[in-house]
Amino acid sequence: MKQAGNSVRDSRRSVTLQDSASLVGSPEPEKIALSRNDRVQGLISAASVGPVNRGRLLQALFDRGPSSRADLARFTGVTRGTIGGIVQPLIEQRILEEGEVIPPDHAGGKPAVKLWFARDAKPICAVFLTHSSVRTCLVSLSGDISARNELRLPAHVTNATEALTIVRKCIEKHSLPPRNLFSASVSLQQE
Image (cartoon, rainbow, N blue to C red; front, side, top):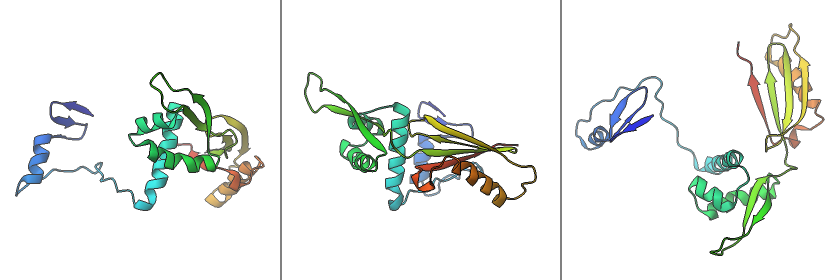
């Protein structure tokens, strides 16, 4: 998306800020043709705000590396209190842990404590399903692979139930009950 002057352009259409203002204030607004690719993004329900913010904070931490609460607040554009409200339950659930303490600079203030994914946090089980095999691995929240397994997928497998049974067997080879997983992610090979 390019911005030039007071217009915003993308590959599908161009609308100037003046045009959009006239759409709001005009008794007979212009019609804008929307393509099938244009979608109105749904709003987040009140019940979903917490999990969405938690996911965004975890993604920001993964992208930026070990960060203090103040760093995360600056990066995400919210207050340190909001970050604290998201982070504290994650620490209590042993998803995050506090690490290195950074002393205050010459201006004073509280020492900053870096946050990172807990070393003993439940792993993610990644599953890669191809036409001929099922591969699984356990991945820590910081991205380190701790175990891998692979099972051949017989050519005679023709329905989802049979394929899922083989996926389950491959996951069970890790000797880790599903309740001890943070989450699972499945990727399918394209034809």
